[in-house]
Each structure stands twice: as structure tokens, then as C-alpha cells.
Length: 162
Image 1 (spheres, rainbow, N blue to C red):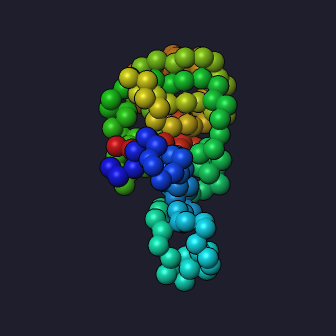
Image 2 (cartoon, rainbow, N blue to C red; image 1 turned 60 degrees about the vertical axis):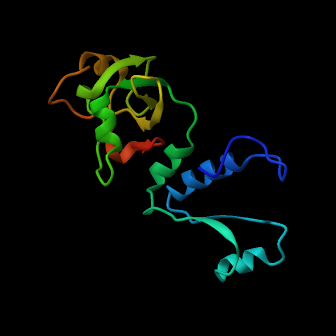
Image 3 (tube, rainbow, N blue to C red; image 1 turned 90 degrees about the horizontal axis):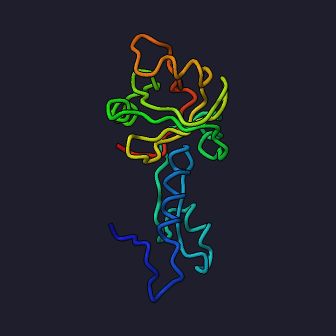
């Protein structure tokens, strides 16, 4: 609530971007500090825990695959999911895969192993994942129960929060 997108009299802006990136990196299991780089011995003081800084506590260690997914850019297609799937994927402390029952629409073409972008029904980005099968098979299974996951949890990186 204290970080805004507007520029202040003290700086050139960018604090919102710094915090956003720091949060993303901490989510990958890496400790992040934002501090004044002009302060003498700032790195030593951070290591000694005597620096004034903002610390982003790392979450549990992410797998190499999840780290790669977090920074991947070239999604082949967009998978639109319903509110139930959104709630299941974003539920705290719960590892969920994306099942076809929660998929409402697919934009674009993809094959097994391709990167797909996940969005909710309003178009809000939720994350990225590797498809377990191609777009044709996924379209056949839209909304169906009892099907294999379209994106398995091990190959899913969520960018949104519940």
C-alpha cells in the first residue's frame, strides 16, 4: 500500500517494478534485499544484517523447471480457465494441476511440451505451464471430468495470487 506507480520528488520512480521483480525472485527461493546502493559497505551490512533495507523472504526452493517457467516469454497459446480452476490453482498450501474440466477456451495452437499462458475468464494472467498434450486433444476434453491434467503441477508456474 506504500508503493505507488507515480513518481515522487525523491526519485525517478520504479519502486513498484523493483518490488514486483523482488517478489517474483523471492518466489523462486532466492532472498532479495532492496537497499540504498550509495550507502558505504551496504553489501557487507546486508550480510551482517545491520543494513536498512527491504527484505523479501524466499519461499521454499523452486525446481529448475519452475525457475525456467518463471522467466519464459514465448507462450504458444492461451488457455482460459473458469473460476473453479482459478480458485483451485491459487489455493494457498495446495499443489494443483490444471484439469480439462476447468478449461473454458483455448486460443492458438500448441503441441505436447509447448509453453501455454493461463488466464482467467476476465483475461487476467495467472501463469505459465507446459502442455501435457496438444491443442486438438485439449479442445476435445474441454470441461470434461476424469481426464489427465492439461498442465501438471510440476510444470506450472503461477504469477497471480489468490
